[in-house]
Length: 478
Image (cartoon, rainbow, N blue to C red; front, side, top):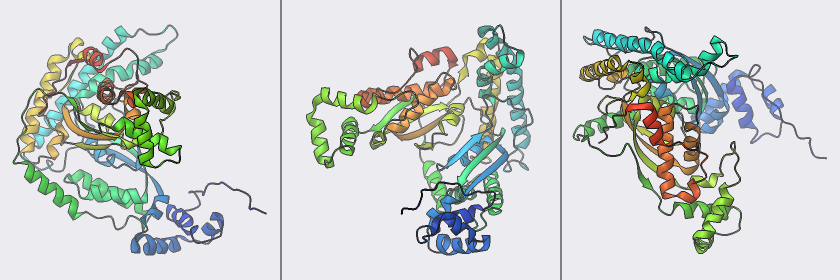
C-alpha cells in the first residue's frame, strides 16, 4: 500500500532556521519523514552539520532553506540601494510616494562627520528638506483643484487618494541621505553573498550596516553567515576600474535618453522556435527550420498562439526568456529607485551624481515653486562638486531624486513584459511610466510579433507623459 501524501509546514516558532535547513538536507539520504528528522536534531547538531557540509564541503544550496526576516531601520536611501541590489531576496521599503519626510530625518555620512565640509553638507540637505516641506502644501492644493473631492469622501480618504500625486512631485527634492526603513526576507546563502558585498563596499555606512545585519542574523543562523567577510577581489576590481576610468572624459551631447544598444535580430524566430521545441519532439535545428519555413504569416499565427490567450494577471511562458535586450538609459534617480526593484534584469548603474542635469516636474512650476526648486537643485550640484573632492562616492548622499542618472539594463523579453506592464500602469510614478513605455517602444520596434502583446495603457505614450508631467527633463546624455 502506498504511503499517504502529506503536505505540511515546519514551524519556525519551534525549529531554528538552521535546523529546518538540515531537516530538508537530510531527506536526500534518509527515508524518515521530515517530522522525524527534525525531532532527532538539536541546534548544536544542526550547527555541526552546516560546519561540515555547507562550510567544509561547499554544499551551499542547503543554506537556502534557512530563511530570515531582517528589519533594517534608519539607513540612508543610498544604503537601501546597495541592499536591494541583491537579486535573491524580497524587500519592502518606506515609500517616498505615500509618506513624507521630516526635515531632520537624514544621515550625516561618516566620511564627512569630522571633515571641513560637514557644515556645507548639512546646510544643503536642510535647504533641500525645507524646499520639500514648503512645496508640499502648494502642490497639494494644485492637485486638489484638478481632482475634486467625492460627495461622500471625508478628509482622510480624500487625502489618501491624492497624496501620491502631490508627494510624487515633491519627492524630486529628497536627497540620497534621507533615512528609510527596509524589510528584508532572504535565505542564508543569499545573505552571505549580500554581506560580502556590503562589507567590501567603499561607503562606511554600508560596511557598518553589513556588519550589523551579520550580527543580527547570527542570532538565528550562527554557522551559515559567520564566515562572511570583505572580498579582496571586489575591492580590487572597483579600485582598478575607477583608476582606469579617470583616463576617459564623457562628452555631453544630444543623444537619445533611452537607446536599445544590443538585441538579437533573429530573436523572434528564436522565441518561436523554443515554443515549438517545447511541445514537439523536434531538435532545436528541426524546430528552427520548421519556424523559418512557416513564413511571416505562419510565424505571426504562432506568436498569437504563444501570447494571445493571456488575461491581465497571467505571466507569459518562459520561452520569452530566450531573447535579451540591452538598453542605455538616462532617468531621474526617483525613477531608478522604482526600476531597481526589478532584479531579474541585470542593472549597471553609474555613480549617482549631478553631471546629467535634473528633471523639473510640471506641477512644481504650476504651483509657483520653480524658483525655490531650481535654487535647491543648483545648491545641491555645487555642494556635490565640493564633496566629491573629499570623497567621490560619499558625495552622492547630497544628490536629490530629481537628478538624472545613467544605467545600463539587460533583460530578457519575459522580464521586459513584467517591467513595462507594471511600471506603465496608471498608479505607477510618472517617471517610471515614462521609462517603461519608452522601453516597450524600443523592444516592440524590433520584435513586434512577440513583444506586441504587452498589456500597456491605451492612448498614452512616453511622449504624452513627458508633456503632461515634466517642464524639463534635462537629459544631457553623453
